[in-house]
Length: 124
Image (cartoon, rainbow, N blue to C red; front, side, top):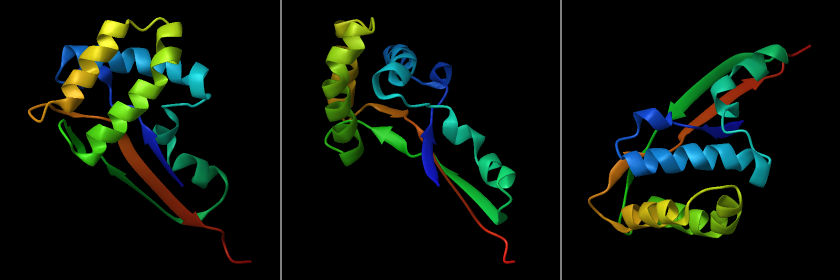
């Protein structure tokens, strides 16, 4: 299993990016029926299903703005979500500010933490 979970917005370096994350994570369950807290539950779902040899790892890559693949992917995603975010109450100027940050090569922060969990069924 692999998933991402929200890096706490209050720990982000840039106040505008933190405000955007708060708005984004409030809207995502409505827009995409997703749960940005699910990854924090790993590996418990595997334990509850009786799997063995369970492991879990987390990876929190830094986000650098500019033309990095990570920032380009996020900018594209956030821009596509713009209509739904605005409909959910996110101010367009905040989205524009975040997109400017993502284009700036001097912008550094963190995004989601990526978590992977694994296990195997016991042999009968």
